[in-house]
Image (cartoon, rainbow, N blue to C red; front, side, top):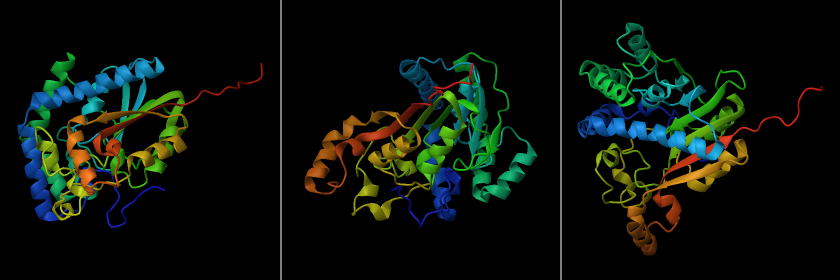
Amino acid sequence: MEQVNPSRQGRYSYSSMPLGLTGRVREAHQLYRMWQEGLDDRVSVTLDAIRQCEARLSAFFGVALEGLDVLDIGPGQQLRHMKVLSVKNRVVGIDMDIVPQGFHLRDYVEMLRHNTVLRTMKTVTRKVLGWDERFERSLARGLSVPSFPRLPVFRMDATRMTFPDASFDLVCSWSAFEHIERPAEALAEVARVLKPGGMAYLAVHLYTSHSGNHDPRSLTRSGAEPPYWPHLREGYRDAERSSCYVNEVRLEEWKRLFHRAMPGARFLHERQDALREAANALRDSGELAAYTEDELLTVGLVGLWRKPRPTWGPPG
């Protein structure tokens, strides 16, 4: 059964979690630290993610990541993956937040209507300080292109997409599905909007990983540091500071949800094996005995699927 925490509001956008002023100030501070840790690293991570996606689509399905109609679910405020994909493909994005591009006043009016005041202030600050512009220039240099066009991004719920059936050759997502309150419905929608022969590439950040509660502190460190898995341990849960809604779906449940919507889906586990000793020590002590080593060490689960083509055709 799909797991949902009823005490949390279920948008999958980072900004939709009602953290309050103190929480938002803390989040802004942590995000500022993330920015200080290196522009080049963020560009490299973005480019590597797309190259990895391209290599996997080629290996699994024999398809090149070029000339495709692509949907990116939950692209985030910087549209990182969308921008890279747009160089060789026709890309559309959807998010529960308004995602401004440049300084169009209408975008920020819409942000105030649909996002939060603090989210809007944070975005404006990032734009005014030139952080997004510097990232985009560096990303463009990495791709040897002069710039990126304004991209189509719609405010849309992934569980109720308004696209017609069979609209896309590829639906992709990076670290968005763990923020969707009803992921089974979103996966069914992905299957619906894919063309026959179209592909899904959906990377999920697992809740049961060390950083799975999305506490920004765990994302700004150069490596995982103790206390390990604080959100799963009784003695540390009160100190948990998740920055967003997380649906808490576990590894095997994700696989069941994928198979229900996408029969025959295949999976890749992106693991953090450096924490194996810590995981086994805690499991042996009984603290994390309810979790398998695989779900503790798997940071990212990537689901891949190709929609079957009809085996029948019109009468000859």
